[in-house]
Length: 101
Length: 193
Image (cartoon, rainbow over all chains, first blue to last red; front, side, top):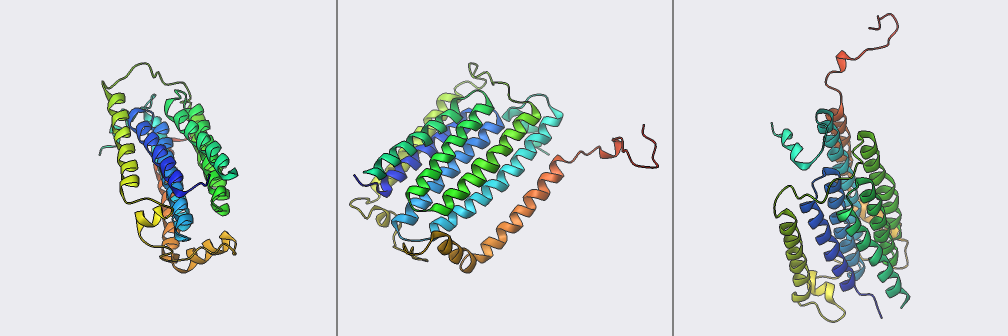
């Protein structure tokens, strides 16, 4: 039994959907960030699967950039969470309405 | 055959971890489930001969990003379990699961209805073989990645450097204590009050 890129794409679709469900149903911004990471990883699996299937290194380069953007996103997101928690005792997505100007 | 076994094990780790992130009430446990998922993804990268990316995946994601998550969770003391029994917004879960299911149907539909078939499914889905940089199985993948990154994508690479700088500065500005002048400064020659 040979592992083809279709296997990876199905797995990636499942992972992306789980991440999306988590993003929609969880209310803790930290867990929502983790769900965004899941979705980004699903995309990374797709990139590498296509890179292998199409003999093209560009897919792996794209993963590299996704990693960098994910790191930047987490840094900014977590600092927003820290800034909000300074002013409020609890943290749910609803508390982030204070970000409005 | 070995490939298939490794794939199934890695896929089970990835999906199990992902479900763990979504259903764990405690954010610390969710973060640890995320580590499992990221390791599973690294395993899949190794299976596809993307060794450098597997290494970076573990070092950057499991090493840095998850530690950052755990650090914030512990620092802020928000590690108490969220009460998942109450649903603050009526119908949110049902709607969320429905939208997620719809997304899955769309993705799989796009995959299976787009002329995928035979062994050349990826070509049917996206078009061309080796549009920019051919993958050479003889050379190490770090070499090829570096070639692509520093020749064709050098501008994007510089842009990511700028992005990281902006993110760092932004984090400092966001977290900086605005009332810093009110703090007691313990400097020589200054009264400590």
